Every structure is written in C-alpha cells, then in structure tokens.
Length: 268
Image (tube, rainbow, N blue to C red; front, side, top):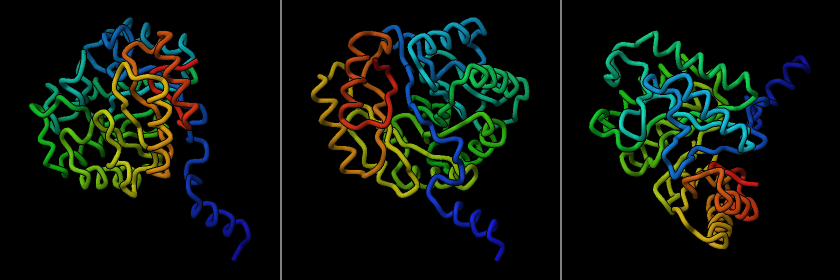
C-alpha cells in the first residue's frame, strides 16, 4: 500500500484527527450577562436586531472570549428571541431561506472576528413547540442545521438542560447522528449538578451546570470529581449570571484550578 495512504488511514483512526483544525484550544465563553438579562446564545434569533447582535458580540470580545455559544437548530421559549429557520417558526416546517441567510451572515461575522462557535441544538422551555419524543423529527431538524451551518461550527452540544425533556438514550442517538454527519466533537449539558448523560459513548465532553452563587471551593472540588468520574473533558459552562463580574471570573478560575477544559461564564 502507498505510504501516504497508510498515513491518512492511520490518522483517521486516531481520536480527533478527523478535525485537526477544529479542536478549540482555549475554551472561553460568556453566555450570560446582566444577571442573565442578556443571553449570548440567542443572538442568531431573527427578532434580535443587528445592533443587539453586534453589541453583545463586542461584549464577549471585551471579556476575553475566544468562542461563543449559539442556539443553532431551534429555540422558541428559552430567553429573548426565537432561533428558527422555519416559516412562521413552525418546528420541522418549511425552510425560510431569509432566516437561514441571516443566521449564516451573523455566523460569518463571528468567524471574521476570530471567534469559534459551539452550536447548541435544542433548548429547554420549548415543549409547547416541539414534540421531543419524536426523535426522527429532531434528527430531521439537525440534518437541516448541519447542512446549512456546519462550515461555521467547531463543536456541538446536543441540548441545553437535556435531562428536562430528552432521555439518555435519545441524547446518545442524537449525538451519534451529529458525529456521523460532521465528525466534530459533541457535548452534553444537564440541570445543575447532573452529569450522567455525558457517560454516553458518543459524548466527547461534559458541559457542567454548577448552580449559581456556589463557592470557589465547591466549584473546584466538583470539577475534579466529575472529571474523574467521566474520564472526559469537563467544561465549566454555567456558574454565574453576569460573566463579566469579579465573582464570575473568580469562579471560572476555580473551575480551571479543578481541571476544567474551559469556561462558559467568564474567567480572568
């Protein structure tokens, strides 16, 4: 066999080698500001103005961020704005090409500012609009999102607070589907203190929600505990509602001291 072919095959068999340029080296995000009044994850929403989008993005850059968390498949109910690429925002309905173009334009602006994107596909507080028991419909939505936006995305998270509305088996199935379609890392996120879904084989990293107003020592100890239990990277994703506050940065530092692979609410 040709030596160069052997090298390629060997590379493909190595974990992460499929996407050598897409691994996030410095995972720093600020997905909440203003006591959760500003939610960065929602800035692709079609009813969020361009000025709001630009202003929030600039705040992230000013807080030292290297990436942003974005709802990318569907969110109608969690926080301000509706992230949807469907006509009339009807889940799994007809694709609205104008909404797709708006999302692509904003993702391009984010990438132009040298920020990576972690796509969060589904959100809690959406059970009125989405039948989360219909895994086939969820996959169909993922297929569209991946087809339209994957070139902008570095990594994925299946869902925000997934255990509120998805089973562990569903998360595994959806994560496996994303990995099959993209080859990119996939994470899981749950309600405060929980991390069992991240033991699924198709989940590459755990995004942890600690709860708010926790002590630095608690955050450090929990990070060490979860990392040891899962033997996977742990991102300290949620621990403060104002990512640019001194308290948020101190908690983020504590998480990193505990072995976190990155932070989602700011750090020094």
